[in-house]
Image (tube, one colour):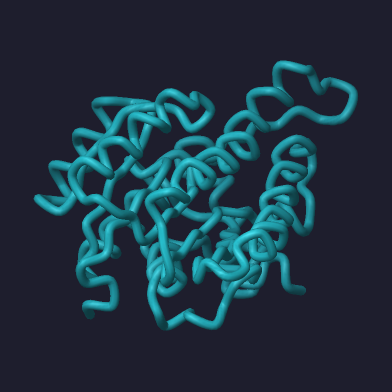
Length: 244
């Protein structure tokens, strides 16, 4: 398929997991992709695997100067930008009673502040037909034990799309949320272990975790003109986890 032929995309958190799977799918569908991540070794490995239509920029979405470098690189090489997949995210467990200010700051700096400035700094390069995709989570709808900060941050991401759809009226730029459930990324498999993966798989009607490529496929749909009459929407790709 070539639904993204000639398009330029930015994917934050693009070195591994969902971001890397989306980058692979975008490139397969004709896009030129800039991946943005914090670990040089990981983004270099990703670009080596993705091939000549991928570039890597090292940085953190919580650092505004890093984001400026990202978009300067996009402008220098491509001139304009068609797709922003604000996918970088962070989260860890701390139950109520043990939550710290540092924990809140780390989570919201990446998931909320990082998402806001990833998108805001991209806008001068975008125009009609542009697509912004925000990574939400089933936890933003259902909540999860010990995940107060993470769940709240993802609920905020969902509202950002609603608000920005209003702010972007007349620009021709769409903004939607892609909300995965449990996904078998490298990080998730390491964190959960074999037994944890079985527990999460059993929570969904499909009785399994998602493959990152399945999330990447939906990101490609939201990036393409196939979703041209969608904005402010949330697409759940969670195996039914938050739907029942």
